Length: 364
Image 1 (cartoon, rainbow, N blue to C red):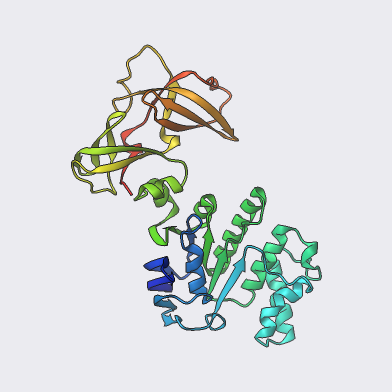
Image 2 (cartoon, rainbow, N blue to C red):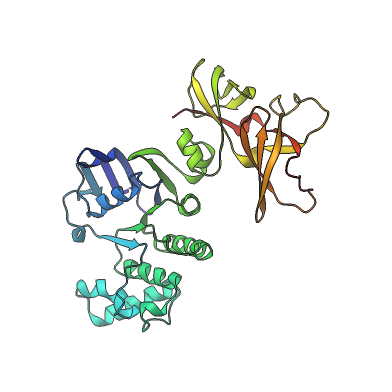
């Protein structure tokens, strides 16, 4: 069953098309993330679903009921904000109890529900504290608890982790995933953080300039992006422009500035003479020292000569920036190992990759 279904929903502000007509649905119990850069339309879409902004066209359904014209209070939705939106003069108990009191629940039921939800977010002993006495992570948990306590059909998360530091953000990602799994509540999250989207989502709606670029699982979006924008926005991408010379089945031969390259073409139907982009992820590129051996014995029939410009230590991995002989820069990512000698800046190197790790996609 679809929890949310949007049919040709759009939003205009005068001559500006903030949200082009779009269709998509969220299944009951799914965790879906609206991902994209600033100005992509993701927050506008969330506000349209929440009822804070009226759509210029289209219909919005929740559990099959048309709520397009319903006020926010009648939609049965919960919302968690980046700034927590806790009332500073109230205790944690009163903040969480507030939506229950608005619904005129009995006092004993309110007390039980608040206790249960504080146990659920692992904050059982802070009911009488004020928000200013809590850490950022604790305040965000209280904000989640206040939303969960009245059991909404759908929870909308508006950049909920944006105000937290990296380590705390990662902890809260796990916490939200745990709550989602335990409660089975449908969640629709908005973020511009690709790592957050990849780690938390069942599916990602990637948006760009008010349009949906691609809807896919995190694995599909990373490994099989349909456009150059999707490839470059998710993770780090080496993008190589070329022209199709031959395309048969799931394999293609593409003419590029690096020579003739073989590529996987499972999600691209480009024909001979058409311009395409090749995607090679940094972790798929092999880098070795230059030698006297010819540059024609790599996995793709070519080994590409270049110069190491820089190496950046990123904890367990090292990211190398290599300038190829023709001028193109490529990024190589390797697992850090004390047994692997660190190449020196300016050293000549050779790069190669397997054809199946070279993905052909249509140019934007």
